[in-house]
Length: 102
Image 1 (cartoon, helix red, strand yellow):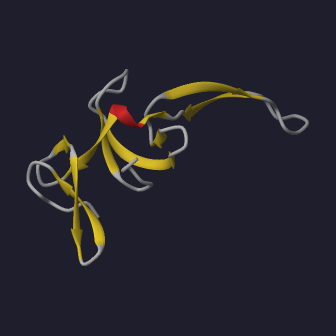
Image 2 (cartoon, one colour):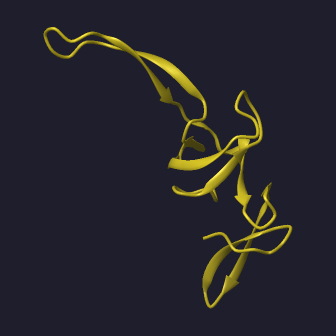
């Protein structure tokens, strides 16, 4: 999985299609990622203390990594990625314009 925490991505499929956001967490074993303000669901939260009320909270849920693409700021589009090796370091490069990610 090439998507890491902190990357800017665009959603390709689902109810939040075309949203641009930042990756909060990556789960490589399951192939899912947690994206900020994408795939929001409602969770009921119990009261914790006496006199406090229970509430309904919106929480972001993980989505499959195949449903997002890295967002290239130079192209201003989601793009596929190529891996370039320079001085024994792997760099992610945009497939369209060859701009480097991070």
